[in-house]
Image (cartoon, rainbow, N blue to C red; front, side, top):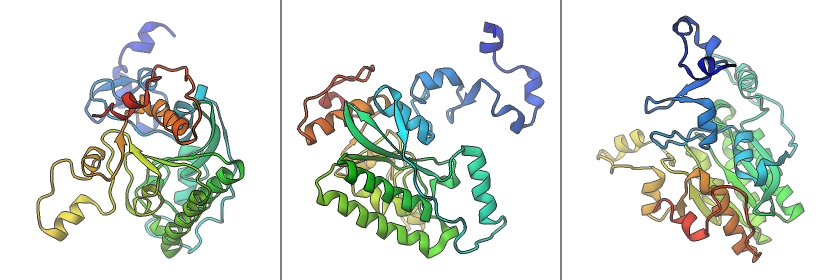
Length: 304
């Protein structure tokens, strides 16, 4: 592949192709700011737009690779309960929606968990993929979360989670809502053993996820510009019948009002959280071979 085919913007004939034909093959992607970015450059920049700084959503495996030492991790197998527990159908059957989401993402569920090292410390890590039905939590995600807690307890490791979800799955009704209680009880078991539980909220973190385990971290940080909420801003505005403050429900707004502990750029997350773990576990701070190898003060104040 020469520089012309690699770097010249898509040819005119590609404009006439269907989106499904070009979405996987194109070397370019668009940011919400309108900037056209070479996918290779986006990856080098931690999947953040070099123009506006927006943090693009990650798949679970992309998250693990960027976050853990040397990009090395091992997926933890988790039992997946039967699909469609209440035989839900709207304009499309729930089973078909799950099948489609699995085909698009290559995941069995929106949530995945893995083990690896961070700052030389063994950790259990979990993440959600928003492309899988909006990262919504149902029975499967609830069981995967509990599996992560069990793994952390069995191996005496910290648990770090990256929520990215619109909330609970309406297609699973009260069963999905019950996962809020189950995951909360699971976090309590983790805390009984004084194992660190760290949450890094990403865009978006909403609904029942915010109202349960995502707000229970010993330390809660967030990526910049993340929407963090329970109910949507429009619903709240219509309820209170008042204009909402500028930046309402953003990570920066929540930081200013004491609801989260820090806002940290993606490129600094592994260094900042790794250093925090070294402090919490009273271990000497290790050296991490990446450009975000900064002190804890620099990391936590990066959004200052």
